[in-house]
Length: 293
Image: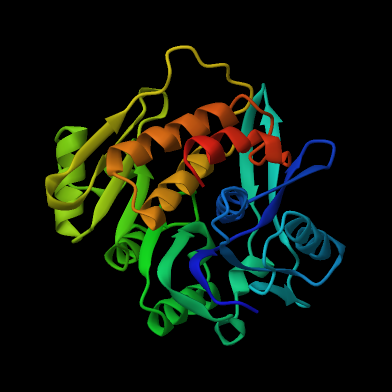
């Protein structure tokens, strides 16, 4: 069991589509998957049911070269699920509660070296996982990257803002920024006020088809827009792809503008594929070569 400088904490689950089709996902899992392909060697911390589905996740991680020392087995709670239903072509989501990732055990956490901890907001909906993350932060002098993911009914404003207060970098979309902010001002002014109010080192705001912008240290500003010509097959997991490169850039010390450009380039390629992750190493090779990884 080797200590890691980059830790990804949170949910791994199966999206269940009509007809009982199961697709492996969960934002933190997707982020860890990409970072592994980018040779970042992340430690993914989560919890799955001690049953065939949970063991399948462990095997998928092993086959991708990921360390499974942070994947806990739970004999009382099943692996996470999101049940997706379609009504006139529009999906709705039931994020099933009391799943294994809601009960990540603080006493079973593996060692982590000072570095960076990534987590979202969904996996902290339950007290046990919140306590585990708190212990992880206390035991390790790590910067924290929070990827906000507001999914009703699994969030409360005061709880999310407490997560923001414990983070160094925050990523959210424009609607989430508005939901968590006060006052009717421009989006950029909202972002500046939000970053200052919470003492953040950096803030990234995504704007869907309009691209994204980021605020860094000492009023540093960076902005990108997606390519004008973009073949979109599936947007599922695009935000996770974007986040994975943001984290890579932070951990490697890339300039903020370059990090945003590389994150957008990778996410733009991913939406041309079906699914949130890719199992072909060749897909990642051009990025590895261009970024000298």
